[in-house]
Length: 343
Length: 265
Image (tube, rainbow over all chains, first blue to last red):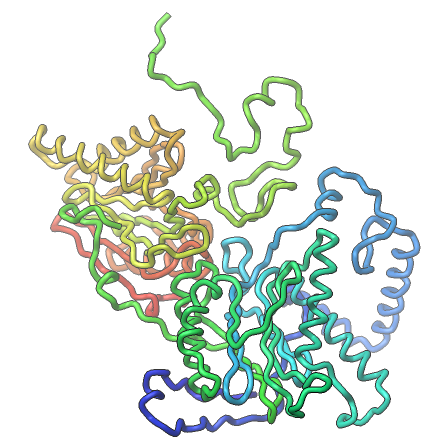
């Protein structure tokens, strides 16, 4: 796992000239949790292990499942495994059916994602909370995902749509890999972050035109290959945003959701292109702390992820950030009889 | 015939999803096929799921809410009142250091939830009337009187208010007692009272942990534990836990900082 070094506070760094490079223990890139919305309950896990322990049952179950899905798709049942649902769905405008034909509301939602470019590449931060309305239901949801060795994706908004987007991008990457001219890694031309960003723009805009958006604000971070005819041969750091209706822009600092109101001013003030990793992390943590104080749908448990030329994409394990609760406003009570009636 | 002129016409709250007009005729297509539950997650089909609880779904867009967690547990000799410190407008935390436990009289306090402005106004009225009553009768009012005064204000103005309060305190007649006054203006004396949007997450915990006749320390610990559990799951509750232990001798105020909660956020 990537052991991220402790954050170096921004104010301290400005007084010293050479910033100490944190000794990061870098091993294989961090694993991502599997794309599965269902929270695995102990019951299901035990059933699986019981089933898999019986050697002859698995092929039969698989065959049964294949036949079932074939039967379902052949019979054109009202529900279907195919993306977008059954093609032969009767367009009844009442109740349940009508709900799938217009823009839905997000149900399980993630809040802000922050991103900044720094000296070695690009860094993203997001908390690990997915809310179910106002309830903080899923406290270990991973909202930063690796797409390929040059691209990192973070998303706020509907979590199931984010999972479907990462599935789509990984499926594309696999198809590219399998249909490439060469099987050798060094010859393969992976999609760079800017290509992913442009592709997502097309995806989101297309869904918006069908009045059925993927309800996400996506942050794409990574490196982009030089454009044709550009002088420099170097891959440049890239940071861009794609929102739910297909709006795109790129910038040195990006934030979605509440972050665009609370964090962008801080990021714009403190950002420099030559920020060290410790400084960049401290800056992002400061912004996440403000968001935890002021966003009802935020959590103080966050993840940091970075894309660098040497190490590719690394996503940290979630950890808790420090918060401060000892200012005078907290200590002084306000509701007493002789008080001023303040809140 | 004798009919009190000030009696309002009964009107079903808009939250129920059925208007009076359709009730009179035959069941028209406007009748909701699913019951609109009060929780934000269980609203009727066709309506947007907006994640708003009963206390906050009828607020105007910019109205401040103390969608909150409030709790009061009596013990022999007094009452422990507790609340979180978050006031929100929509999903923005307008005030993370608020004080939702207001003092009505020397040893009578109330916990406020719902619209911040409505509950502040109610508290001011009750404070005023209780002070007057104490002067007129020459002795401290009882918690029962304070609770019913609050109830009267909440009930008679039920169409214009969004307030759920818990009145608790110590008096020489009943000792420590707690009254719950939810939306609508009922007044119910309870062994312990919990309210606010975060309360839904801790009913199970309180049902299993509460015992009548707990000591002062046990009640205080349970208040802090339950509120921190509610703050961990409710988006509209958070910040610090403020508690007041009300006894014959006086009031002991305490607060638990947000990084020292019994159960983490």
